[in-house]
Image: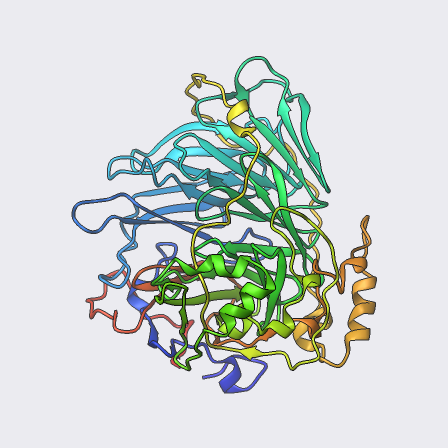
Length: 574
């Protein structure tokens, strides 16, 4: 059965797909949604978001799932591929009036079977701290919207901290909070702490310990998403102005930048070893940025509309030897010496001989979902990560400590196209950083207990740009670069972003490798808003409010459907 407006094969909703590892299968009985399973009317609503936390339950069923649909927030036991979902028994359910939940995050350090610290951001700008297990509301931050009146776009607990969390707003500001501190009864006053290229960091003037501890103003327009590096030292911000900015979180030093091909950046993620960052956005592309070289190393084209989520698959991205990465941060002579010793394989993995004779095997896999309702999986190959010496020049390799804007020297050799993979690994590059400014603004304090209702005092005017299909990169021919440059030129704002095209900030399409998706499948009727990789499955969600579980190859477990599960009519067999 086909969807309306197109051919059967192109519009059919897929329930399985195949990669080199095997077949991924949709598990209908493991679907989570609102208890009535009625598709949510998503017109004008905030994106459906999903977050997970493991409460370390000794029963072996410690995974918990939280998701928002419209004004509703749900917290369930997540049974994954093991058992059918029982939608009749949520651990907690909340319905908000006057505002909508936009994002949420649980503290993994403090989570137990008896208590979970869950942060929830809202469209009116407030942030709520709740315990869905105890069914308590402990605190409300920015209650009177004196700190920021714009919607919360992203929030996360600071890695390794039990009390600090970071919140991004559509205003373009990020705020650092401490759960033990209160917010003032008047609008906060700030003093400049640090200033850099199109960003500033302020600290509060108040003598008493109060929130926010810090205010970051980043770029022009909303900060759509941010992500901490795996070691928690660096912060990557994806902005509506089209810029990726990477900061040292403790010192607030800008470490590197990248510009989208055009339009805003909507999502960002780090590779598990912290060496690469992938972004997606309104140019319909996924872009791979090298942390150590501070440059774009590849773009991926497969989506037909905006890319809403990117994520690395930590199970496919594997490292078996971590000694070799230092070889790639040296001189071109060192690189050439290394290049002469490496061996190429066709198995999707890369074997390289290090100086002590040991081999290095690294594999990178990441995925993306978009408003085109498609799931794409991508593999990075060694010809992308380790190009031949003739394509490696001094003009396109930048030091991690500096922020040069040198132009990329185009190579006359054919650009590699890739849908298989490998690379080197290790920890984030060692950087000699100044003393932490975050530690300097954190003071001890005792917060007041508050149970407060959420109210949106006035309706904010929020302009949302409609996606134009004729501006999608997927609809522009490779030979129409001049026409594309004219399109980009019409989108100039306060900053003339066209000057970035053809530099390391934003290489031209023909200057870097173009990735092709390993898998590209339509898996929903409405735009996709979630992609999360777990040990035995991957999880997707669409704006209708359906959270789907896809079992990895060999992980399918036969299960008895819950009595509340009814046959689904919104998915057709593949």
